[in-house]
Image 1 (cartoon, helix red, strand yellow):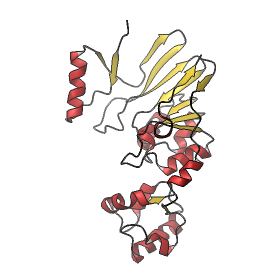
Image 2 (tube, rainbow, N blue to C red):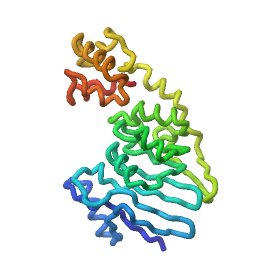
Image 3 (tube, rainbow, N blue to C red):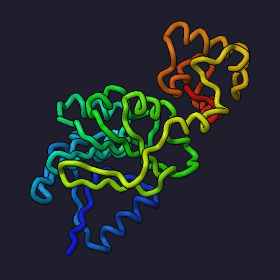
Image 4 (tube, one colour):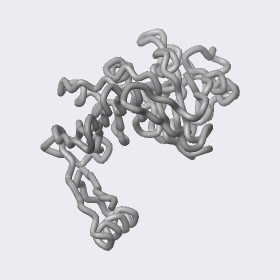
Length: 254
């Protein structure tokens, strides 16, 4: 007999999907657990699941309060990060957990708002799995996340390239059925995008919504603060707000 449990942060919201989710839990009489940092359960000999996030008191931020847990079987560890973003990653680091794990499920589908260099240093993963749909409308995963993972020497696996990704372990070693994603493939994906860290004044004006004055502002920003570490930082440039960023984000890279 299989025991099914739902571990949830316990935040209520009003979408139809959430209501359907609660209905299924009720109809199938599934045990519902409000997960909190510090909970730990031995699932089998040498197999432990520990919740690292969220911690009381909760906020209304659905990303910040995502369930984050690590599963450790003897010497092999998996870190599941949900949709947390940089502030949530920082909170987990500050709680002084041992979060070093060989396998990292990359947060928020590889969004540029997550997977900071500091978090990667703390996890020190050997492989990273990015759960992401093919040709998704958000443009996940972000180029800068692929860069950070590749520069850290992490093998990358992506659902949109490799389909289902199965990691098998005996607690001492592990294996993955698929060959890792080659970051050089990303160069083909980004070949038509404009690199906002290196583009000159004329090239910057090829970006939607960027004229001569905003191109000047981008170059001035780079000269003052250095290269952009994520494309979202371009919103800090004078003349570029959220709406203009939405128009240009599919055209730019770093």
